[in-house]
Structure formats: structure tokens, C-alpha cells
Image (cartoon, rainbow, N blue to C red):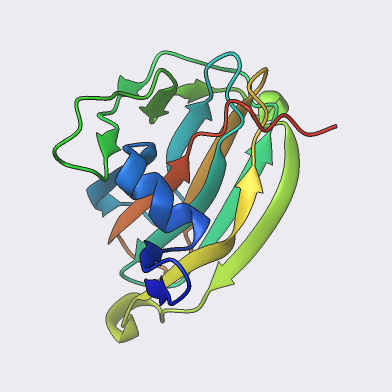
Length: 173
């Protein structure tokens, strides 16, 4: 944060200000055992009228691939808790985040980005982590899939998650 000398007020960047407003959210999940070639999936669906700005994160005990899809069709899955960064706020996010839903391979959607996460393999695995610092502004009429696939040659611990802030008044053309 910075003080503006002319008015003596504190200012901060927009994501930081969203934390203070109680409009910044986080959701993550840790899997203690992801088999080689298996995936840890998170499906994110924004509520009507909201255009969340989202960053993505992932980690794996060995080499992995991180993929982000738009337009995923899924069913079921575990409903995850979405935490407000402002711990004194009672505000909740009206969107839906589920892990390990049922997804047919033909319903993955459009692949928006893929990252290889080098982390070693088998007994030489050292792990890796990845954060997409630039924000994705997601639509509220489709579901998004964040998928981490273990490529280490052995079973590994892994995690995926997202941080996002709500922007209900900033609909983009």
C-alpha cells in the first residue's frame, strides 16, 4: 500500500482492495495420492451477473501437466468450500466449485492453456508448483475445468486451486 501525500489516504492495487471489500475468494484442494497418468480436476462455474477475475495454482510431487478448459460439461463431484480472503466478512460467493466430477473426454471443452510442470519422476521426483499470475476473466454462462495430470511415473501428492475476485459491474464486450 502507498500513501497519497495530497490527501493522506492509503491506496492499494485493485486485487488488494477487493480483499478489503470482502470480494476476494480462494478455493484449493490437496490430494494425497494421484496415480501416474491420473488427474485431479476442479470445475468452476460463476454465478449469473458476475465476471470473476481468476488466477490459478497447482503443485505436484513430480512432473505434471496443468490444463485449463472452457465449456466443460460435467456432473456430480464434491462441492468445495470457497473462502473469503477477508476473514471478518460474512459475504459468500454464489458460484460453484467442485472437485473430481464426472467428465466425458468429449466434454472437456476448449483448451485455453497448458503448462508442463517439471518435477522429476519416480524415485527422482522433487516436485514443482505453478501459478498463473495473470488473471483470466471468466464467463458466467459456462463451466471451466482446471486439471492437473500426474506425469511423474509414480503416485504423487498434488494440489490445485484458484483465487478470484468478483466484478459484477464489469461485463466485458
